[in-house]
Length: 566
Ligand SMILES: Nc1nc2c(ncn2[C@@H]2O[C@H](COP(=O)(O)OP(=O)(O)OP(=O)(O)O)[C@@H](O)[C@H]2O)c(=O)[nH]1
Image (cartoon, rainbow, N blue to C red; front, side, top):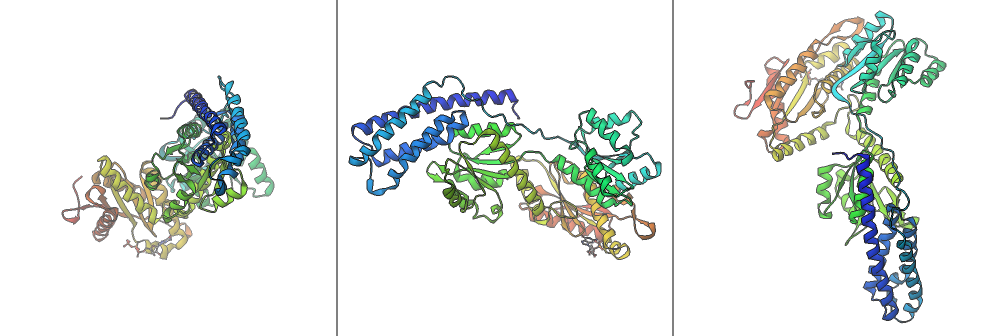
């Protein structure tokens, strides 16, 4: 559940009050230690404890609006450091005490002074600007075609429909334009508009408060000059297409724009921070910007939490109770699958040399505590976005944008684990194009690619948001359908197969052809490992191929691959 802005502010204020109580207790304790130092001296352990306490205060006070307190604590922490690093000095007796005592006593007094007047909240906390992600409902991507020439408009609608988009011809002169533009906040839409109407459509979007991210405008033009492109960009277009129209590129742009829009603007952060108040503060601040945060409760479970939560980045405190964040970062890198996971250190360490040394141990960035709320949000969002772009590049197939082989297999295994944990039924479907070699041989490889892309678009547009689709091999796709038993999965895939068979593709000389598909379905619940379910779906697929293609076979555990009654 996402908290309202008021709730978040109230929680942040409560956290700050809690921090004040704790800081007072800690400074009181430091005052007692200062008194003890004056009387009898401090042991090495006591000095080291005072140092840790100051380090924590230096790193957290600024976050709770007490920057002066944080700086005073940091300066005192730095003064103590040489005494702790010098083993010879062993504790705080004799001449060492003489040198340290006045500095420690006055430093602690300064901290008390700074805290004395803190009854009400000090400096207001930074207000990060929350970037509300746009939620799109429904799977069908809608393309509004604003083109006054009837023939061009019809060609556009027919051409784009092949890619599985829902195309609607909209006349700019009609009142329906307003309705379709408004609808774009509910249904993922892109508007393909002739250059003659671009200004008008862009102005209408502005009037209705619809941004280019909500409804991207793609300009079509007969004029492919730099001047025209410049004009289109200045008028608000997100893409430009000159005649003759390159349909695959247009369909790709529609796909890309819609998937960018569906991407939540935020990210997922796994937080490793042992100060509960600081952790809670960071969590609230990041969640108010739409970031999903999980706090690692027990560091021993770190690897398990990574696998379960799959964060975009890890925010890691460097000095943890009894452990080092740097060592934990190295431990994370033991696992090859986490080699590319960005780790951002959060630390009070402000010496660039030490920061660099710490980063060489497996982290990517260093945020120095106290970090302002706004800076924390901006750097986390930026890191998450980059991490996502990189993971998209690594895990997505370039032709279709679907998950690659290894990742979709992993998804099947994960869904099997979900079924066991939650007790629901889920299925996998292996889908293969029929006689695809003939398509390539007859119409060329480029034409074959378009057929593959059309099926991928159809799957994306027809399956549910929760279904996961991957390109398993060249012309083979794997779909994981959570919450669908084998009978339901079969009906869904059969339906998609019927639609796909109805699509017309155009080869050379405008000759048209169509392609069918075969599929095998297996219930994940019948297996103990995802690979066994995939093997079963594959067996069912080949049974369907042997039975004449163009249809779906369900694997039956009793009989091997066989037809199952719906
Ligand atoms: N255009 C194109 N073709 C591909 C791609 N990947 C694989 N193929 C082709 O897909 C064809 C698959 O052929 P086969 O495995 O013989 O199967 P099929 O012709 O579909 O026959 P059945 O599966 O038995 O119906 C091969 O010709 C591959 O070259 C790709 O990315 N693009």
